[in-house]
Image: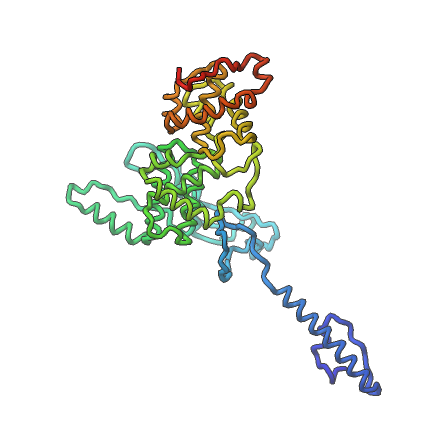
Length: 408
């Protein structure tokens, strides 16, 4: 066997059948085929084992709908298994002391200096600032994960130059030398997103989601050539839907001063690129019996009822009426804003908590005629929409509903 296969056969996982020189030729050929098949199977197993395992699905926020095959890059990091021990004591559990006053790293057992120039990351309780207020922070603010790979420490240059204009020139030179054009554009977009979210009273969670979405769109160059305001408006609109606090196109347009047509174009591009369509997304869940991610009338009721200063009983009853109307196919094809406004008008009269149609129109952002049209559809099927228990408890009364569809 050794003269036939050499040293490769011994590494095969298939057991080798010994053959002597007195065996016939057919026996040697069968042994050769048997061992060769074992070699091939072992090589195939090794090749399968060497194939790289696929990365974690959706390791980054907002993955593309069609993932592009990119070459894997090697990542390097510190070896956390390495421990620092004293070469004199050689204790597996060393007593290492950091003396920040002298900047040395000293062994607490024998006193051997293991390192020098240790950076003190603790708080500084002295202040050397000229302005008012003490800032004991020595190392600056916490790092922002959204700014990964971007220098987060800024250099502030005072404007007090006696009117010579030198401060402005120094600021321009500092900004050009510290950050590239792409990084400056990203920082500008992040500031705009934070400012608009504060003006719209949106929480920081929505601001962070919008920043993540903008950064992913900027990395993939999806909206190249589109105005910055339109891209930011689309990111805020999608972030509101992702956080289950949706805003309408009209509200986003009034906030950002972006046209509805341009906002729709940017939204469609991001929706197709990141697979944000509820029907195609694999992470779509159901809440309250409907698909999450679609801006439904129920999501708008809480905000509208709060702006109209309605009692808490109105919102759950109005939500039940909308769900029942959806099952019966009433007012299908109408926008969620129109359905929410008409349902609130219907419920307010049903419960005796009357609100004028003008107030509901101003809050919902739809015309009075649209609200009357939805109300007319609900009024035609009022006996199917109103539950018997509401009538028995005295909460609702069908006689309160006006027939002329006018506000009172």
